[in-house]
Image 1: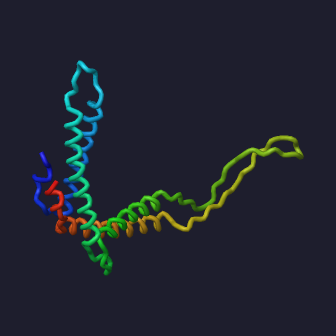
Image 2 (image 1 turned 30 degrees about the horizontal axis):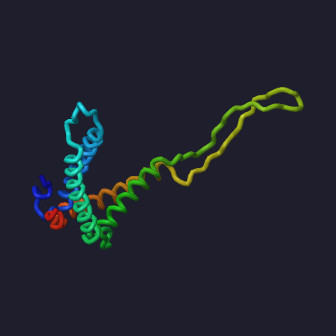
Image 3 (image 1 turned 45 degrees about the vertical axis):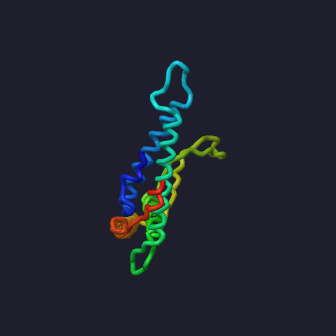
Length: 183
């Protein structure tokens, strides 16, 4: 069965991404079956034929490659307007990745302010005894908890606005699958 014949030649990016996810799952199943059937006891034939499973996996792989390439091409050519700037979907996707990374980093920063006091022991050479001393460490932070919360809110807002634009574009931008029909 050629899976590409079950779908039209043109899909939206969203449809293509769903199909890609399904194909990747299918590839996982097929490679697991092939791995399990490549070697077997001569008197116990495996449930799935190795060669037939590999052949089916090759067809799925070809559709997957063609579909992923068509999504990449659509992402490289389709544009959206974000913050009064026209950018490709490919750039928008990279920006979304970076916004996620920055949000994670900002959220994980250790913010310290004020003075910490701790007790430790020190050897006193005059008395030849250990003595307890208080050590003070004063911390200064260039970012406050409130500042972090505000910065995270701004980053989340930018991420959500851009993500909404990308999702909208994904539902209206077509990918060309004509090459995969011939497979």
